[in-house]
Image 1 (cartoon, helix red, strand yellow):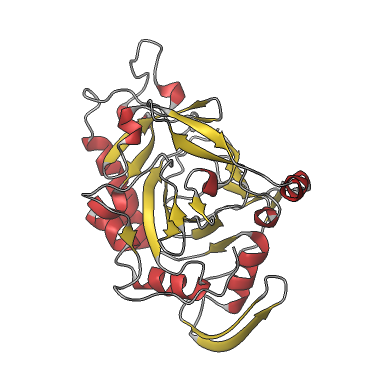
Image 2 (cartoon, helix red, strand yellow):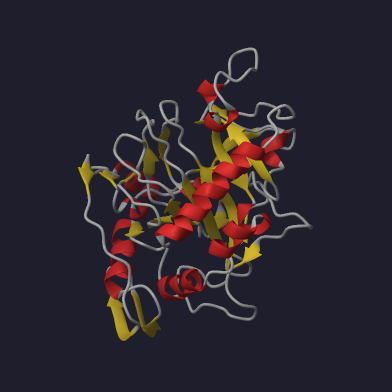
Length: 336
């Protein structure tokens, strides 16, 4: 596994003409935050590390708020829902399925004994907090929905026409037991037609080779087609449903080769993750946690259809959160 070099955050605004024959898009635009080099790298690799997207003070504030939430949550009333990631053993109880408009806590598999008792303090037993932090918690809302820098990034990247934010989480990656997350792509779990999922992953602590930093297979978003989706079953629970795949797509999936690149990060660094790029993280074997805040965006109708089978669904009380100001529609020039 290789480690990569990182492009620093963008500098002053620039006006340029963009031409990229590899992705068949051309446009003239004034960039607000990203550089053309960063945009090209995202389209080439399927992900992009932006250092210093949040200040140390902002990252510390989110980290401290996350720890406060862990201190305050009531373990006695918790149903002991564990977050699991395997294809044959994925979380799917009502506590999980109804969490899209709430702030809930999901436990590490190894933190719960067979009798349902925790084998460590509750603060060290939680795998993640989710899934409506971006709406319900003022600090996370400010970073996600009230962040002018984020809006500028969305305008520059032009990945969506009318993006909405959903599925916000703090992933704690607990020391010694923080579970491995196997190879996957995000559009499998937040499926739209056409696929438009884009992940925003912000390090709140140092992310290293030993505490579970993310690894990516560069360029796999162009060869790894979405072949299944994670759905909620009509009878309850969840499962994976196979999607129709052409022979050409099967051949391309078979050609997905290369070497994963480990991306170490500092607090405040942002990783943009294309919904089709393959990525993973190893088990945390270190004595340190690896807190990160992550959320996703998808395009909204009529530009994309959010699948009604997806595990996470908007509610009347909390529809998906619009990212750009009312009436603003991005002029997309990128190709997913």
